[in-house]
Length: 228
Image 1 (tube, rainbow, N blue to C red):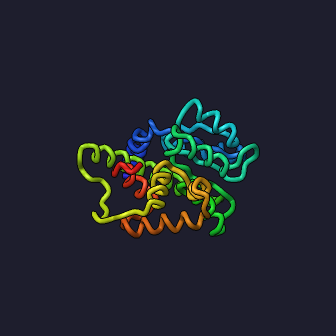
Image 2 (image 1 turned 90 degrees about the horizontal axis):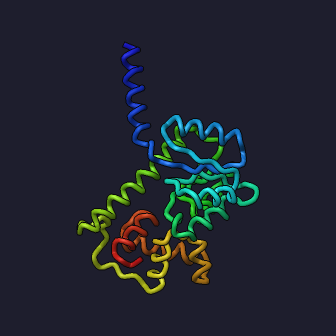
Image 3 (image 1 turned 180 degrees about the vertical axis):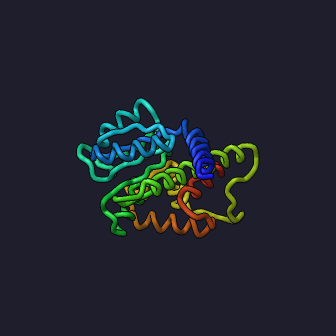
């Protein structure tokens, strides 16, 4: 009986792994031990993992290959995670890649800063490998749903539902167009020459107007409505 259960579990794991074979991850950290452990675990789960020790090395890799997701330490020599994400979000080839920050800093203000800088997920070290995999799966599934929804939208089926009488101010329209480009609130604030708090207020107002849940849905709505 135990042998049958073990065999069934192995088959299920192999099936899951086969579904991930085409998914490529870029893992960036200056700790070689963490790189080794996390890379081994992700590859065991079926992912193709590239590695880099800092942001500069990661940018060189991105010139050669575009991953499905980036897992990045925050504090690194040469170029830290914040600077790397700025480069990623400014480049059309990479600005839609989901980014997961890993950091030993777990205070609320650290999490907020990481997300405002452009990361999609913020995890605190030490972490459980299973939680990391779950976050990766969630982010990749969200991208998959977005791509499927966009394809359905091209066929004339609405993918994002908002109230029909939503009206944006000229400033909100500018902000949502930049959100759709993958820019972080801080970057938008710099471009429009206003405070980051002002941009956060505009985003919050648009979420209230549209009844959407987050910036990702807001960006999808802007793209599917031909605003961006």
